[in-house]
Length: 190
Image 1 (cartoon, rainbow, N blue to C red):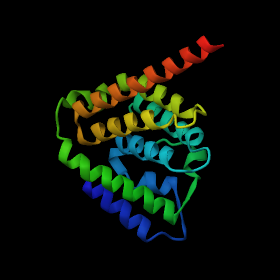
Image 2: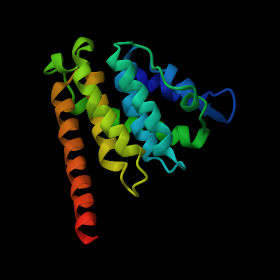
Image 3: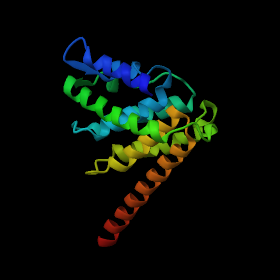
């Protein structure tokens, strides 16, 4: 993960102009595309970018689709790839990723590797798609829990750590439970 972080820092420090495209940052992830992109897109949904949940949920669904068909490319839709981030936003995102990667190095280790193997990732696809759907919904503050779940799953895939993947699933299920409870409360009030 430190190698990836170094490449991203170099890419953002030396852009061709004052804007950095999502395609450029996605291409920098190389072979670890699925886990890194889940992490990358989940972090983007937490930044104060207008309609980020609506837009980047499309990217999350594309990553889920690429995992389903077992394709190693990033497969982001063109509408997501064309998004331009300012150098300041890209730098802020890299700082967040750096903080996450540094903490992850202390926690993540290859454990329960079969949960993260490319041949067994298909079972994660419905869950990732569900988290993308919750992020897509225009719920104020609703991106937080599913984004954290996807960050954990992305880290687990990158580090081949099944325990972290399970932690991401538990976090996401807690978010679904809270959302279901809120919907139930609204229905009861009506």
